[in-house]
Length: 153
Image 1: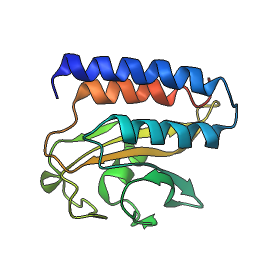
Image 2: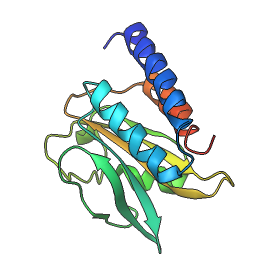
Image 3: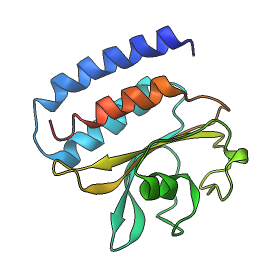
Image 4: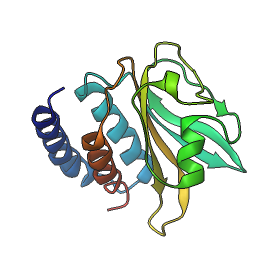
């Protein structure tokens, strides 16, 4: 998708989500709504969801798309890279990422963003997969980070 078109869509999504967040303060309700809106408004999003840390394990919490891996092998894959570095991870082609975990073989690119609570404690990651190679870029990273801030706004 062209960068300007992508940015325009993110701007509209952000406006929509900002209004929706005003109707409920529950963080999990907000996360579910964010996932649903992103998944259905961004046509290249194949799988959209959160993995949360739970007693040292990284487990799926809420998502839209095909069935997910319920628990990810420790220190393996793109999601753990996001946890361990506490930085966004942009993978244009999953075949080029050593140790990529293929929960669904149709996934070809991925973006992962660490997710923090209002006290800046790491909770987990937002994980988005696409069935297209090179679907994600810095526009996605920047806008998804902005959207994640709505959970605790």
